[in-house]
Image (cartoon, rainbow over all chains, first blue to last red):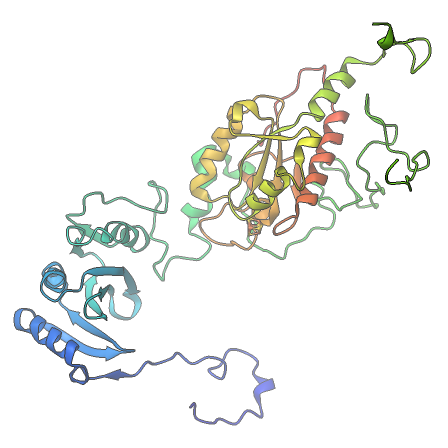
Length: 268
Length: 169
Ligand code: SF4
């Protein structure tokens, strides 16, 4: 439980404080607590450097050197029977450590255990592909390249997967602005109309609350529809909701409620 | 034969109608708006519902076509991503004149809740739009109302004069 702090002056500081949210710290425990994990860790340790290992939420986390990633995962798959790579991606720690953390989440069907292999690489470094071992790594590695700019060696088709091929920048990096850098903001205009069109089309409206009451270029009010671009600063005319013009449409008869007959005898 | 004889001088008069070419052409155009299937996200579901039997778009002459060459209305239903922007422009260019565009839903109007790097902030940055339809998602009735408004708009246009192609810029 969180330690008690007096909350009398909470109204005076309605801004973000940790009263509202505290980053959860999941407890780590020692690998020796679980016999299966302990045996697996011994097997890995016998061949490779292990920088750190612990159990978190019932899963073993093993931190290794980035150069060993292919051989460790090969061993996990062929020797230790972790036969599924359920997820892999990168985490951007560039600001605090100058490194990407790459994780491989693995599952053993026979042992019913999950292990996470982690390693760290620098911004300009690349990592070995594990696509030869697990086909599921194919798209994950492409996504990792697309979103973080982590280059993967020996990948059969190292190309962006989600963003367009001519995109600049890596959107899931912490330094990438949510609303896009200049390239992203003008992407469609530059591509379709060319850079000269920027001035004519104008910048994007990024303010979701912007409403211009008198803007008839973009909006009309229901029941007050006016032609595109009309000046309505003096008030717009009422146009009652109707599905047909008042004087009718050529060859289409307008429904007249007065002339209608209500049939009471259903079997007529 | 005699049974089906029509007395032109009685019931409804002679089968002759006088009108203008504008009216005939616009009557035809406004009652046979064939729309391009353009469901991009959740709004597409509502668009499909409007086309299906419960809301029955066919009774307005709006039939969804899978080819831009057979369509004259583009209902942009959903989120337009920046990656897709060039394709929407290409498909719009492939449609034959005269053509109209309905931007359906907040995403197509303004980018909607996707205030991010990957979403075009309104399809009117890429193609010229005739009608903006608010809502997230607009109900099928709303889309039908939009199509009926578009029919009114078409009837007001002059059909006989060569149509000026609409341009964004
Ligand atoms: S406007 Fe709403 S319903 Fe329509 S595509 Fe966007 S998020 Fe989906």
